[in-house]
Amino acid sequence: MASPDPSDPCVHCGFCLPTCASYRVLGTEMDSPRGRIHTLKAIDTGELSLDATVAGHFDSCLGCFACVSACPSGVRYDQLIEATRPRLNNPELRSPWQHTFRQLLLAVLPYPRRLRALLTPLRAYAGTPLQSLVRRSGVLKLLGPQLNAMDALLPALAPEGFADRFPTVSPAHGQRRGRVGLVLGCVQRCFDPKVNAATVAVLQANGFEVVIPPNQGCCGAVSHHQGQMDQTRELATTLVASFQAIPNPQPLDAVLVAASGCGHTLKAYGELLEPGASGFPCPVQDVHEFLMERGLSEEFRAALMPLQHPEGQQASPAEPLSVAYHDACHMIHGQGITAQPRALLQAIPHLQLREATEAGVCCGSAGIYNLVQPDEAAALGRIKANDLQSTGAGLIASANIGCTLQLRRHLPPDDQAPAVRHPMELLATSAGLL
Ligand code: SF4
Ligand code: SF4
Image (spheres, rainbow, N blue to C red):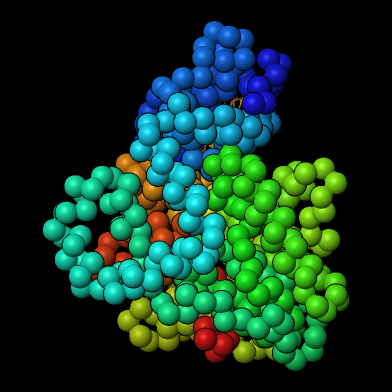
C-alpha cells in the first residue's frame, strides 16, 4: 500500500467534504476523503490497524475522485485509494458473503461470453410483466439487498446484446479522414448495444474507418476499480493483443471508447501494465474528445435534424428539446472531459442544454458499488435522479453505461420521467443513422 507521505499537502481544510458522495450519505468523518487520509496516516504510523471496521470505511468510497477536483492543495486522493484497494481484498477484511459476491461479480462481468451465458435465461424475464410482478411482490428483498439491487438494475435485454455483430473493419463513409479502433465495453455491449452501433455509425459518417477486433475482451475497468491488479493486467494485455492481431497492420489514429469508466482505465495502461509491456501504440481517447478534436465533418453537420420531444413532435426554435447532460465521474473527474459531449449535443438543431445543480457529485453507480454497497448507492441514485429531473429536461444524456443503468433505475418508472440516452445515440438519431 502506498502510504501517504506525512508531508503530503492535505491541510484538513474540508473543502472536499461537500463534494464527497460517501460523506453525503453516511455523514461521518471516517467516510470522507479527509478522514480516510487521516486513517491512512494512522495506519502508516502504527496507531491504527487495518481491520474489518477500518476497511469498511475504505469500501464506502466510490472512487469517484470528486475530492481530487475539489482539493485546493492538490492532494492526489485517487492515487491513495487506488494503492489501498488491493489490501482491502484480503478475505479477512470482508464478510464471507461480501467476499464471495465480489469474487462472483469479477468472475462474470469482465467476460462477455460468461455474462451472456448468465443473461440468456433471463431474456424471458428482464423487462417483462413478470419482472414487474416479482418486483412488486417484494420477494427479491428477502434474498438480500445485493440480489435485489441486481434485479433493480437489470434492463430489458435486446437480442443485439448477445453477440458482437460488427465487422472487423467498418469502412469510412464519404471522404476518409482516418482509422480508429473501438473498445466495446463489456457491460455496455450486453446491456445497451445500441450505443456501440450508434458510435460506429457516427464515426463512419464522419469519415473514420472503425476497427473492432473479433472476440474483443474486457479492458479491465471493473477489476481495476476493485484493486484486482493481476486480473486487470491480464485483461489489458489480452485486449491490446487483440488489436495487434488484426491482419491489416495499418496503424490506428486512436483507440476510442464510448464508456467513460472504461476510458479512465484504458488511459491508465501506461502505469498498469508491467514495465516493458507495450500498451496501445496510439493515443486512447473518449469518443467525444476525439470527435471534438477532429471536428464533425461538414456533411455530417448538414445531415443533423431536430430530435423529437417525448410527446412525439419535432423540436423547433419555439419549442426546443431540453436535454440535461449527466457528467460521469470517470469523465469529469477522471478524464477532465466536460465541454466536448455538451458541444457535440449542441450541434443537434434546436437542442437546449439544461444544467443540473450537482453535476460533480457521483450518481452511486461507481463500477460495482451499486451492487456491493446497495443502500448508499440507492440513496445517491435518488439524489442524482431528482437533481436531473428537476432541470425539467425532456431527456437525459449519459456517456457511461453504469450511470445510465443507475439513472434508469432511480428515475420514476413512468412515462413522465425523461429517458436516458447516450450522446452518440442522439447524434446518430439526429443524422438519420439509427
Ligand atoms: S484533501 Fe484537500 S480539500 Fe480535502 S481536507 Fe485535505 S487539503 Fe482540504
Ligand atoms: S473518491 Fe469520491 S467517495 Fe471517495 S473520498 Fe473522494 S469524493 Fe468521496
